[in-house]
Amino acid sequence: MKFALKILKDFPSYLWSGWGAVASILLFVALWDVGNQIYGDLVLPSPLETFKTLGLMLHDDAVIAEIETTLYRASMGFGFSLILGTALGLLAGFFATASMMSRPIVTILVGMPPIAWIVLAMIWFGMGDETVIFTVIVASFPIIFVGALQGTRTLDGELKEMAESFNFPWHMRFFDVYFPHIFSYVFPAWVSGLGMAWKIVIMAELLATSNGIGASLAVARSQLDTPTALSIVVIMIASLMFIEYIILEPIKREVELWRD
Amino acid sequence: MERLEVKKLNHHFGFTEILKNINFTLDKGEVLSIVGPSGGGKTTLLHLCAGLLDVQEGSVTNTFKSSAFAFQEARLLPWKNVIDNISMGLLAKGEKNSEALKKSQEIALRFGLEEDDFEKFPKDLSGGMKQRVSFARALVLKPSLLFLDEPFSALDIGLKKELQSVLIDMISKKEISILFITHDLMEAIRLSDEMLLLKADPGHIVKKFRFDLIQNQREDRYVFSKSVEILQDKEIVSTFELELK
Image (cartoon, rainbow over all chains, first blue to last red; front, side, top):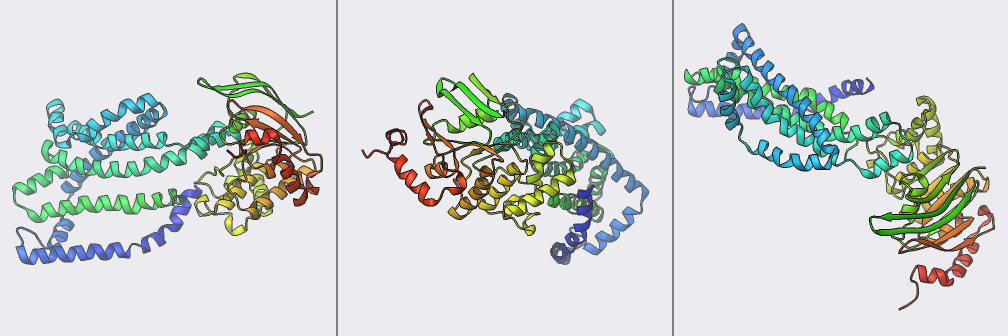
């Protein structure tokens, strides 16, 4: 509770520190406009036109429904990875044999290109929610698993001994000694897992489903509707930036205040 | 009567014999130091006495009501500020949060920490400050037995003297019993009532020295002359391999 209040208290000053980021995004938009003036509207629509299309799209119930579908798939897949990856990663971290055995499996999971997973999933599950969710899980699970594994493997033996010498009860051992350390590994892994999930969900939808924003992107491509395609890209990037910079980054700052 | 009694203690790591037939007693209000070269099993012996390692052969009987441990490195929790680190031991004992904080602040001031430092994380503290916090964390518990694992070895002479004088003050009032290990003879002579010499491979006690003068009357002159005397002792020379080859 105290912690949440502190995050809220520091939030305005954090937002205020974002002017540099805003400036660099505006510079990027300016470059985009230059691109539009050189290559013309078909190849690269102007930012103004894109944002107008975006405004229209966001007032369209059909588009909102597509976004909701995608959000549902991404959060199902990511939520599953988060729970499974964290739990299994922690468990594997506590046992030397398990962590040794899981390493090569993780390498296989990470090394296999997501596109190959999509093809397999389409064969296994057909065209639909399951294929997308499965691909998201397969892509973001290993990232979270490795984060949790590293967190538990790198627990400091000296601090454990200290906790033992002061007879810490189990809940203090967990919340004051183990948890902050593990969390400092797991939380960044969640953030990168989320980024991965968001990218993969679009790709899987584009190839394997007939709804969701990934599928809308495919339709826009086939109709050479560049403004809509770009608007969809803007939606994807803006939502990721919102989650990462407005929600996750302030939490991360508070959590990792103690770090160098 | 509170006491720590070690009888016929042997210890192995795998096939390596670390400690062999260790016997000693530490009574309430006494300070016992164990000196010996590095790698001689001192830390193992201290951990066995403090219950951080399981006894394999022989016995360690500890009837002291409470004990605390100060390590060679400070071992602070990096995600807790100074005051929260000091209060950990109190909270582990089940003390109320507000009480624990109050006591921690009092002892922090006594150990030369300032109020500005209370909210700092360990990463913003110097080595000496960390060690003060570590000492405060152990002593705030008012333990009747204190285990010290070469706690002064990384400190400059000023800070070493400051922390030692806090201990000497407590020792002279018979408030605390201490078991400590060190490789610094002068430190042992300044603080202890009895000093055990632990020779390596495997660790065994070769000699005991007693110092009867009360600790707060031990001037530098006393410590130096005792050191000179002891450094000529044959057992000391052979244990620390001081002879010129």
